[in-house]
Amino acid sequence: MTLGGAILVVIAAWISTWLGLAVFLVLLGAALWAIRGGLRQRPPQAHVVHDGGPARRILVVANETVGGGELRELIGRRATGVREDVLVVCPALNSKLHTWTSDEDGARAAAQARLDASLDRLRGEGIAARGEIGDGDPLQALEDALRVFPADEIVISTHPPGRSHWLERGVVDQARLRFDVPVTHVVVDLEAGPPL
Image 1 (cartoon, rainbow, N blue to C red):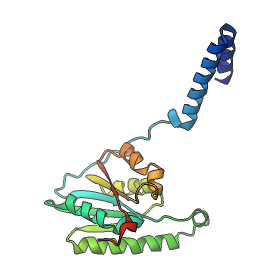
Image 2: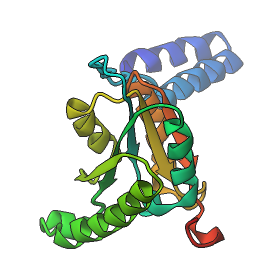
Image 3: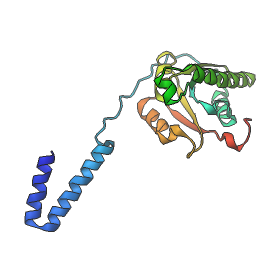
Image 4: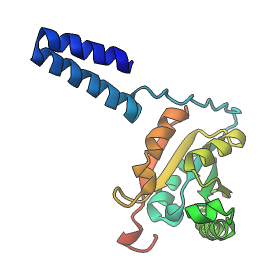
């Protein structure tokens, strides 16, 4: 393709300098688009098979925001008037160094402590919830959970824009592309005050 593009530019420049410049810019734009992922294939969408049970299954993925009041309020609204089954997955986020050295104990313990506190609050509010520690990659954690928990809805909880690594990585948008169940995004601002 590089040789073909160079030949096109030379021929266009031979006809007119401005035409050669235009062809060069079009080819450059196409190359940059391809490099930035324009030709990347969309990931295959995972199909979730529901068992037809009467409970509304809500899959929640959250890390530091797992105890946030906004998240609990949303789960409470989704569970109103139905028999709910809530699975909260808290990814064990780890530093690159600890991941590289396979030292996940600290990350798993911290995630478990946040998860336990959140589950206690949800149960205290009458919401049937259980939880598990998931993969450090939130999309992989969702995919793993969906294999055993066919959710009716996915809820992703993040920090506000500007403070959320998950939003910077496009986790919410990628989840909407990858999974064929509704994905709800809730923003939890832990700096605004203590959890409700």
